[in-house]
Image (cartoon, rainbow over all chains, first blue to last red; front, side, top):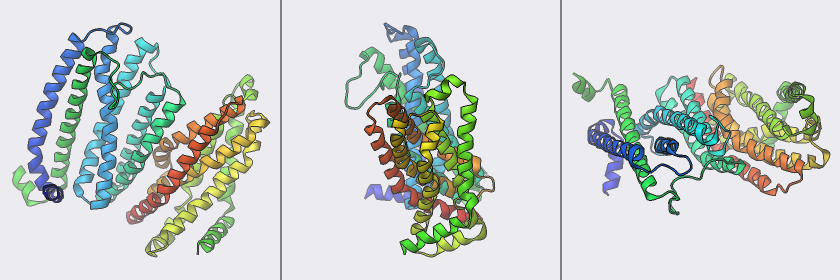
Length: 245
Length: 221
């Protein structure tokens, strides 16, 4: 009952704008605390790797960005489904907000991966399975971005990008399996829901903190962008005028 | 009704031979340019053959996709198809199927020629054909979605490539891999199953997504 009411209220940009102030601040504070704690812990206190030495510490940037970059794309796909099924305006606002954030995080994951690859694999760039799937993710983001730029009408733009996001999200698992199958040099994923981490706890605990912090950071940025987008789109309404004046 | 739709699509195609022949010419041109460009030591042993063959097939498909809905969009037939409430899905399905016939199936039939030109040994050619037969439907059905979304732009070609090529990656990986393994004489049924699986997924969602995409594009006018 409560959820249903919440769902209906989400249809109102004004309600969302008001309620999301608190969420945004919450995410911002959580992100700040978690990222600072995780960064100091990971960079200064975690033990050095017995093989990779101190260069392994870039894991604390690389893994969180890569994980969140993928999650942001999938949430765009979910927002796309919401847009098609319920025609909720807010879903397109969410897609518009997720797009640049996900794109930047993917680029950052690729860059930090290159920096890490240099001392450990001896190369800046290697056509390795997971590297390629991240690169494809970047291209998927760029595709949606280019499509949005090409369509002037705001409703159609939303529906078109939602369609591409849905098709892309369906394809992500296939792409991942195919590139993993192809060949891989990467170490296996750092976290899995079903298995114990292979790293000692002193190493993965700060990583977990960083991952959570990065999720909160992305949540904060996306909410902030959504709020600005709402103000832009609703600029002719009474409540926005009242707010800005 | 399905048969009638199918034959009308075929008739449309037979009146527009350039749509069939130009991509094919491009296909051979691509193979030729590659073979001339690489050093002669690589030319005859076919180590790049799988990758190059699939890459050129992707591009050929992409070229043909651009014309998939273009003419109907420009002269308004597409709107009529979409307005007729029950059949649009079937018409679009048939359109994509016929597109596959004159790209995927035709390329499959020509594959022995292309394979030999790229230095694939004769014993691997049946597998090459089978891989193309199983993999190319995915290209047509995924690609049609992109073509539907970009048909409204006068220069949609680059955008189409940008949207669709990343999604073609799995087909390229398994397709090229199957050819390499076939040349080396390694068992390759797993990759063939994968290609069939990807085509099935594309066949399931492609026509729906294409219909939705066309509905969006029609409103752009």
